[in-house]
Amino acid sequence: MKKTMMIIVSALAIVLSSLSFVFVHIQTEKTFWQQYGTSAKSFQIYVTPEEQIPNLQIIQTLQSTADKYHANLIKTDNVQEGTQSITVKSIYITYKDKKILLDCGASGLFLENAKKLGIDLSQVDYAVLSHGHFDHSGGMETFFTVSKDAPFYVRPDCDACYMLESGNMEYGGVPDAIMENVRDRMVFIDGDFSPSDGVFLIPHKTPNLSAYGEADGMYIIRCGTLAPDDYAHEQSLVFDTENGLVIFNSCSHGGADTIIREVTATFPDKKVKALIGGFHLYNKTDTEILALAEGIRSTGISEIYTGHCTGDKAYAILKEELGDKLHQLRCGLVMEF
Image (cartoon, rainbow, N blue to C red):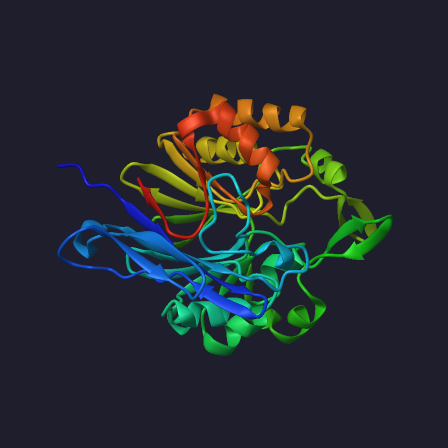
């Protein structure tokens, strides 16, 4: 009997002055639906028998609602299909015998969320920064207060990112204080890198991605010169599973279809099963979104899970174009691979 991989995604969100949460409870005898609730809301999560979870086991999405661009979007844990009310900026992954953290949000709030979920981040074997933006790296120093020896894998230029905001060029990279205080805990890597068996960190390999940076108002400083960002600091976290490769990329600044093609070219003998992450489409036109949908479709990928910076409008268009391939990345989600 062919095994399937079960990935359980749950989330905890701090909602302004109130608290609501999703808690995953693993049963070992049977699979069932269980309802949890808060004072105002209730919701359901899918609960899976522990013995049916091989290899890549549990992914918990940890919400950082202190992010200045998203704090006002957090409404409830029980978001409906097609809404981006929950923004996922930190993901906890267990794979084989390793515990992995992908990103840590804009602040240390992810640590409190992890505690509510019963996740001990002091046991993380290593962490990965998807790209060098402050809203995914601001909690790094907080992570190091609980993890005394886990390395944090980053790419060069993560401290050289700038963003054009309302006509002003503002620094948007890993916060200066973090670079000054905990730089020695960061491991700067180049090229393809495997931090553990079956896990790979893959950078962009496509030329001229600076066109994406210029269109998004994203810039990079190299050798004292400001230029459109080519997203050399962005990397994909890739897992080798029985049913194909599973890719995580938090914002996909270089293009979701580009990332799928890059990973496919890197592993020509393997099938790409799924891509999980935001697609940075919240400010794109319908024409641009439709072009991405076609690009994704042309790769032949089976499943896409997206949220965060994708946006409601883009998700609706992608859903119409991609149909059952597309899923909302949100709390309480169960993904089978």
